[in-house]
Length: 559
Ligand code: ACM
Image (cartoon, rainbow, N blue to C red; front, side, top):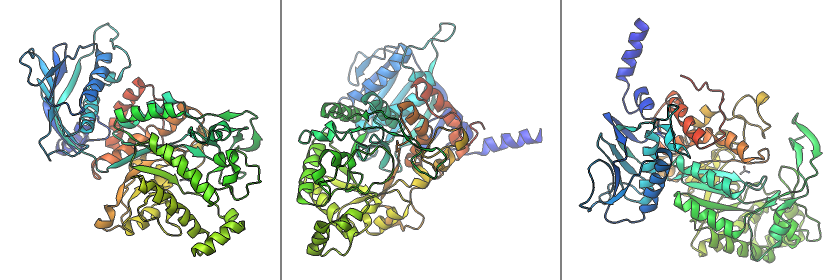
């Protein structure tokens, strides 16, 4: 009895915005910045209309997105009316309202739910989009159904949302999810589903890792052999690639593997991502991870007479681009086509894991280093990246690369993606460069999420849900002025051991839900237990969306 009394006391004294009450009534992921619970609820009925502001300013596709989803699940008509219409029938209304200048940030929104009206206030279509994503999460999970929902007795569910006042905007401007399509290829319908899931979680960046040692996956018109030859490998290793792993077999499957995206497909995906307010950052790996390209065009390597083959196993390979003029011309041509396809401000040029052995052995490279006054091969890599950065900057774009681009001197305007830990991000910020934090220790979703004994084979590592949830992107050692350079965070999904899209979903969810909250919500917003309580409702949404998320993790998903 006393225990029950204590529990009641705790529940009553918890701040409502962050306590269990709020979590169960308002199971939103990521949790909004400020949420004030209110009494009562709004019910969508056949008499609920959507009222649009006088100036459209790109809002229409967002209203269509919301209405289409809810119409599909509910069968309600959700008619539109303009705010100045004198013919708005009686009933309940959802008002889309333009924010007064300067009151709401570019990704922010305000959502007020009262018993007879809902107001969504934003300054941009993106802000409205996040507002309707939140509204959908306040409806029963059935709102995410891809077909009309009927209860067992044939009756329709009550489409209610609890009354609330929400003011929301993201903590970080960069909120990313990555996918490696080089090691395994994933078709366009899945890429679109992945983008939908990125948007559902209010992430705003899809980092598309398009070229690898094991396959070049983007059509380049000027260099057709990149896809004719570079997108195919003879076969694929079975089991783990490391001899030290007990799943090592040393055997290969004997089956050709390949796939690539045509430029038309890429344009279609870019348009789709724009409709979901997701920026796609393409990655073209250089100077390492280049075997797909070298197999097609051996003259780009330091040993042009060598027969290069698209890699059939996983790891880091010594065959890298040679810093000759022919290579720079090739890369500039490739990047020109890439920049025509992708409107993103950032172009990712890789820069990671580039062994220097062939440059050390190359007379050409050694002479180039002497001529340019470069003291070692790290400076030669820096020379390579700086030339590429100049080219990208001249086209009005920015270069981003993995943290090895710090070695030998950072290019003047480069942004660093810190993956080998947080040190790269710290070093970049201290040099007044921007950084995105993606440390392998916390946000690599190719790592095991629970006891490897009962899991599908993974590369290694151990990153359970709670660990990602506890990740803090701003390194404690940075001063506030330096910390401003940390643009945000991203989870990475390398696919050596992930062959199918179902397996991608299993590795990514629910861990990406935790990342979304790290990237969007306030640092002190909630406990892991709060998150898990909301996640249990979120799982029902993911079920409707047919996401094959991992249902077990090391954390019990019950409170
Ligand atoms: C990386 O994981 N090689 C960036």
